[in-house]
Length: 94
Image 1 (cartoon, rainbow, N blue to C red):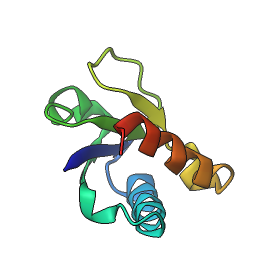
Image 2: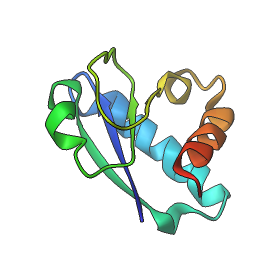
Image 3: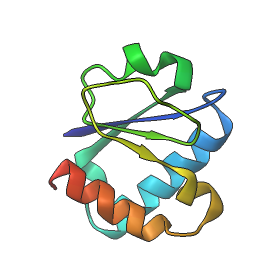
Image 4: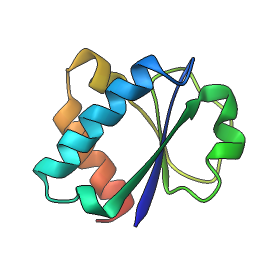
């Protein structure tokens, strides 16, 4: 099971949209059952990201963490969302 933490400024609005798009993308690829999601604010990332394999954030995040961080803005704009899911699948190695 791979774990993804999805964060935005308030931990509610855009992270919820990003998770919905991620779930749809993983389902389309037959991988949804292999992924677990956690949702939080960007401020919570340093502690919430522990034990996760990847961070997707729709807000600015520049702290150094030990796992890959990707921008989730394509999930909000709709531009490049499919490619981003492919990139995330590659980063997770699934």
